Image (cartoon, rainbow, N blue to C red; front, side, top):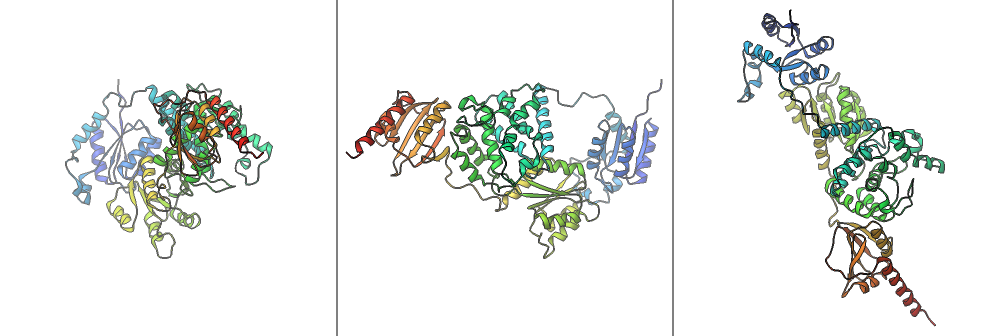
Amino acid sequence: MSTKKKSVLVISNDASVRDMLANLLSEHGFHVSLAGSGAESIKIATNTSLDYALAELFLPDFSGVELKRRLNRLSPKTRVIVASSFSVIKSSDDVLRFGSSDFILDQREILELIQAAGEDRPPVAAPLTDERLKHCLFESIDVLVGLLEVNDPFFGGNSHITMEYARTVAEEMKLSQEMLDEIVVASLLHDIGRVGIKGEILTGKKVISEADFKTIQSHCENGAKILESIDFPWKIRPIIVHHHERYDGKGYPSGLKGREIPVGARILAVVDAFAAMTANRPYRRSLSKEEAVQELHKNVGTQFDPEVVEVFTGAVERKFYFRGVGTKPKILMVDDEVDYLTLFKLKLVNEGFDVVATDNGEDALKLMAQEKPDLVVADVIMPGMDGIAMFRKMREAGSGFSEIPVIFLSAKDETQVKVEALYLGAEDYLIKPVELKELAARIRNIIRRDTRWRKGAPAGTSTGVVGDLKNLGIPDIVQTLHLGLKTACVTLKGTEGEEGRVYFENGRIRHCEVGALSGEEAFYKLLYWQEGPFIIAHGQTTKLRTIEMDEMQLMMEGLRRMDEGRKEEAPG
């Protein structure tokens, strides 16, 4: 019984190398195909089942590494080996780079290498675990939702950005892993109910009617209905349904208040509002980070959970300081590989960039004039005008593009081209395939250096929820913290510079102090303060116990004393 011959594709632009390897492999029972370039090998792989491909490192159109990536994508079962013949190396400058990590094999050893590649080997793939399956599910949802939003000029990347915010808050609040997973999935899918709403209602510039507003409100319940047939292992529906509830009970759709609202929905309400405020809309400009944080603080206790606001605004300063510092940085992507272009655009949009794209240098120059990008990411090898030629045009005097930073990508690792690009002033020169997260990080670092985007955090930023008693009085603060069963310290400053503190533990007032007073008398004095700044710092406690009275009794007694005082001061 004859066994089927293993098939090998030999790829080299040197005919003598191709013939030598073809004779060697044929003699040992392999079926051999030959290709003189990367493009030719791709055509063969498209129409032929291959067991192995032996590719030369230096090809006229692709590097061996890039060709391996493309062949693996086209034919995952084909084992690709990249090597280089000595006839090429000995006449190349690359011979100077050879060191202890490089090896030279003769033709017989190459045969043994291919034969060894065909032997049965234990699987190298990671084991299929619940954690791995969960990660794949999260990533798949993220990509699919991102593709729905990627070309939307106003909502592009919104779900991914909101998810990043929500996950950070959940982690810093030390919620359980199950709740963290619920919040991640729910935040990615929280606006899926918008699919049934007309675009002109969501992005129109005119004032929306009451009927249109009710349609917009329906997206919470519509999203839950869309997902109700999917048996998620997490309770994501309550988060999606209730993420527009208000802390004071005046939200929709159910009018829940305080701790009646699921914690995931309370988190999503805050981060979704911040993401919306710091994004452009057709009817208004985006708010700065500072303006958006101020709005969150202004609505603490009415619209938002104060503890969530404090945790999130702290995280914004530490981890997301680059968000909300002006209009989104605009990136121009120039690449003739459509699949790469789409993936890069999706990743950058999810990172909070505005992205425009084209597949050639001529159109890229036109887009630079129209869009005025803050950074260009361009492939070197493109039809017509290549990346280097485009860069030279950009650097010409009077072009208007000479200051735009450029990152180059290339499938070929050519030292001469790389040096030329860097000499012209390119910020970086990366060899494909490029890890998308790495590229996004490099772009972020370059943008960060630009003072137009990196204005720095204001000095002396306070920790906690900041407000003024004119907007949220002491009775409102007490009610908010009592309703949420919060543990916190409220620090207040009077108009004459006097400072007071009220400590809460699980919603109960435990200690109060102002000047020489403490306990109930201190609290009664603070009730008279009608204006002045305050800071609510969650998690701060004290061992002092100077107040035993119930909060409502304390409030009623304090208000009674204020009324009596006013009567005594009244004339007659």
